[in-house]
Amino acid sequence: MATRNMTAAAQQRGLSSRLPYHLQDFIVVENVPAFTRWKLYPAWRQALHALGYAIQPYILDAADHGVAQNRDRLYLVMTRSQHPIELRLPKHEHIGADSFIDFAAGNWSQIERPGRSPATLKRIAAGRARFGDRFLAPYYGTGSGETGRSLGRPIGTITTRDRWAIIDGDRMRMLTAQECRTAMGFPAGYILPEQHHLAVHMLGNAVCPPVMHDIINAIREAA
Image 1 (spheres, one colour):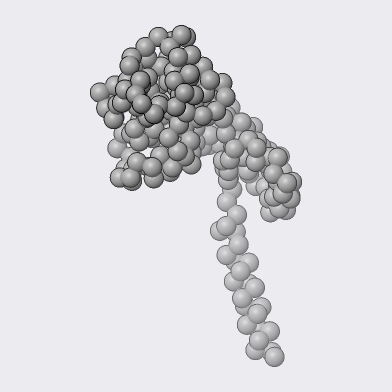
Image 2 (cartoon, rainbow, N blue to C red; image 1 turned 120 degrees about the horizontal axis):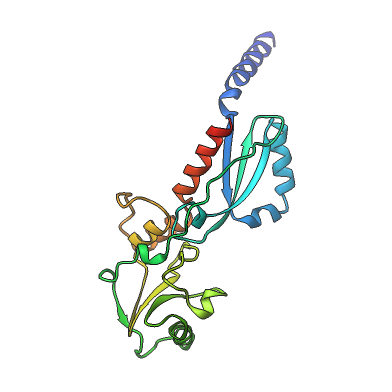
């Protein structure tokens, strides 16, 4: 019994000595804004408070941080401090989707062809009326999903499946994985899976690097 008690005590001391390595001074959690409406979100926050973290939420649009995409996400900046940290985040000029679309790339098809969805044709007609021959037409969603979107604006949210079609006169195609990569703010040399659907899925789940760059720099300045 004494041996078991000594072993348990040694294990506890070992756990205690390792614990500080898992309590980082700063943590940033990214999620959709709806995360705060999760039923267990209050309990989750309380658990982080119990570990000594103060939490400061920020809802940021990636377009404000040099990404050619409107992408609102929640960033929870957590610090092991008595009070939440206040960040001074820069706001960059918006970049249009025309900055990354390559009209010489991709697999184009004729818009007027047998089997084309009437809903797709309706969205394209609405986009032509507003923007002319070249614009974006999302395959689902409200807002731009009904009216099209100018190439001079940041693209809308890149999702985990093909969403955005490029319209060019009488032809159309979906974004390439490489265009999605740039729209997410990843560098051109960032390696993607060869399978298109897998690359798009991973990019749609990713965090835009320029946003995290601004957050981390702001944390350094405030620390």
